[in-house]
Length: 98
Image (cartoon, rainbow, N blue to C red; front, side, top):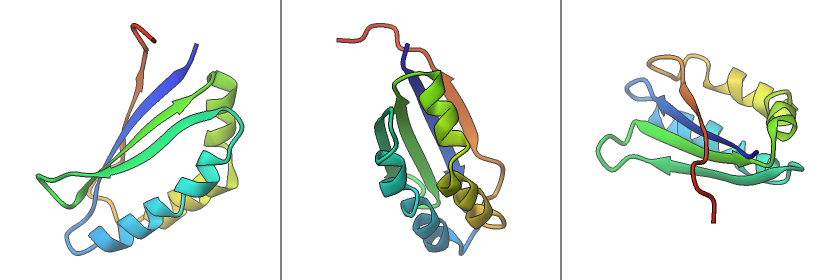
């Protein structure tokens, strides 16, 4: 079963571009992970301080590997002090895959 994640982050005022830089740094290494099927970053049109990762992993093992990766550790450190609140992360269950 695939693992689907929606992660929402909101920057502190004046920290939007710093946060964007930190988030972008995680894109390439995550996309290169074994078992990564999707890793996309979006910025809200409503609030330019709001960002969303849409993620998909082949299985729980691939997601666990991602969570323990050096680039996720680096991302966690890089966003410290840039967020209004902890990221809101939701694990989604796919209802009907093509």
